[in-house]
Length: 445
Image (cartoon, rainbow, N blue to C red; front, side, top):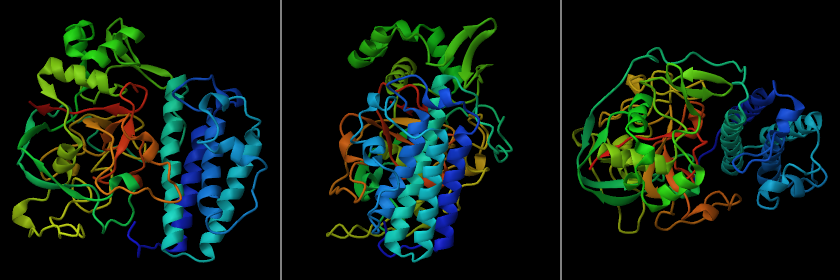
């Protein structure tokens, strides 16, 4: 984070309250049995997840800022995700629903009280860390609901993009080669440790799809026997496909009138011009092999998203000491304006993916659409630290334990909070994860 960056206490307390209200809305309609759910390797018990979010504020903000007394007896052995093994979380002596919500409310009140007592750069950093951590877990609550087949939560959603049914967007854009700067610049008000810092990378010219792969395009791959052709998959991908007997995306089935997909508790016809979602890295790679395409690297993705036309910006250089960076990068694909409905399908506003031609106002300078929002996009790149990486404190476990095994995703999905995202934001999942809200776009070979 920029060491001089500070937000007013009123702004931070509003963000903390907003995040908490979203969390509560995501579980309000669920029964006590649903709040526990069956033991599965890809989700947490929803009640545990809510308690963990509250505990994170306590451990990472209140304790760091001086509070010593725990707010719940034994909370370190209940909610510390690096102490409590995943499969043990269903059998923990957690508070019941009312007790969990009371703990969450008490933590939130104390956080807001502490922020109102004095708010500088440290308090700003810790409060935003807590809010963004909660935003990420709210997305996890949604994919848990999708996994279990629970209904879409009856939250109050803003209006979807006006052009949600805009149709397909075929074709490629050309991104010129040259030296780009991958990662966050030091002027960025808040970044995570895996975004630090922007460093030069040299890219050859490439052509990238204007939009993500659609459900109709992916259906064509299935119907052409894509899941049965070993040559398309690579060794690890084919092993995963065979071991799990996969023949189509996780939440798809053949209906009487063609392919259908499960969206929470409802089966819907495949939306031909919306992006395919809930596919993993292996499936994306197999599609690319079938289509004669490839996944972008994360450097290519960020170059397509953040490049400012050279004719509009003077270009400086990176100092030899690795200090402040040269060519200005856009914060968002469309520029510096905060994300709105016209730019991107975010914040749960549509309750689902929208057509890939929607959100025309969000085009990057290179001509790509929906680089933020709709679906997270798999890249070719393994998740590793940037040069000079150092862990952030106090949340030392955010990135470091996950390097090497995961693949990088970029961009955000339809339910991702817009305040979390920027062009340099890096997400990461294991390549076999097909339950998260991920799709992909392709590049020409």
